[in-house]
Length: 163
Image 1 (spheres, rainbow, N blue to C red):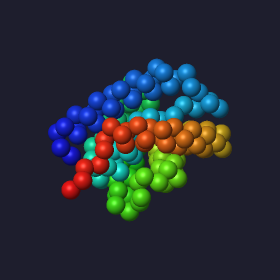
Image 2: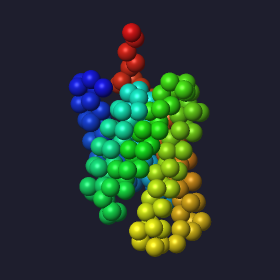
Image 3: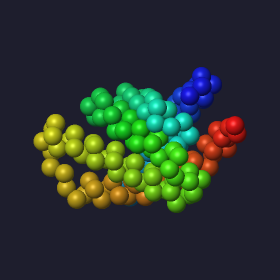
């Protein structure tokens, strides 16, 4: 990732973090809000590969962990993993296909939720009920739909380079 791309990625991540924490905090549907930082992590992983996805995922997760009440590092690890795995899909998927975008974002939410639930179960000895997975399914659907719009906007900002 070039330095200009890196600066632009971090600027987008910071803007999306504040939008997620303020504006989108009001757009709660069925008790969940969209994960804009996760969408951006997947978008940048699709465009910059596994290393770019890993970097942006880690930065997004650390930013989210900094202002979160969960144990520091849970979001960083889950976003890092989602970014890395999405980056490996860079040349294996037709990134412009909105169905694949929706499904990838949805799967990213399930993976991040699964890591969080594993943390709750192992570190805090909490029982993971069907209600948490149901909320995760709602969050996956909501974030997947929000991802379609965000992928479009970010795609206009970060036009692919022709070589």
